[in-house]
Amino acid sequence: MKSSRRTFLITSLGAASALALGSRQALAADAPKVSEDDATAKALGYKMDATKVDKAKFAKYAAGQECSNCQFFQGKPTDAFAPCPMFGGKQVAGKGWCNAYSKKA
Image (cartoon, rainbow, N blue to C red; front, side, top):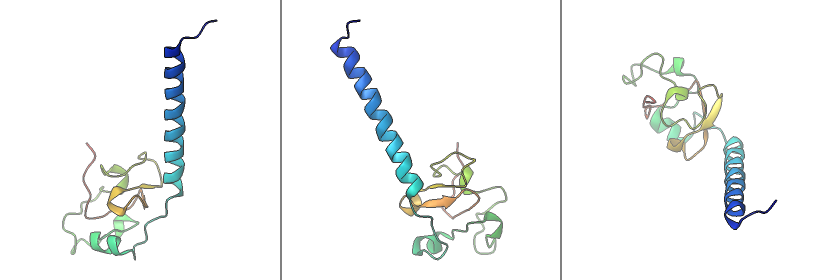
């Protein structure tokens, strides 16, 4: 079977993309988890358990809002932890919440 340069390039680009995506996901999985004591977490009112949000301090909070259904959560809705750009790519709890919450479209 004869291969063309075009076939080789397409195959090579596909393989390189798969490797890059795989290493990015591996890096995200190794990212540290955000602590509630973190300065950014305190500023954004981050809680690892959304049911423990102080509604008197954060009137924006509504039941059912959690990181896993926020547009910034960079994981699957079923992931226990995933990176969040609000925290510099550190991992947040899927069941968590912060004041930057924005419902996923």
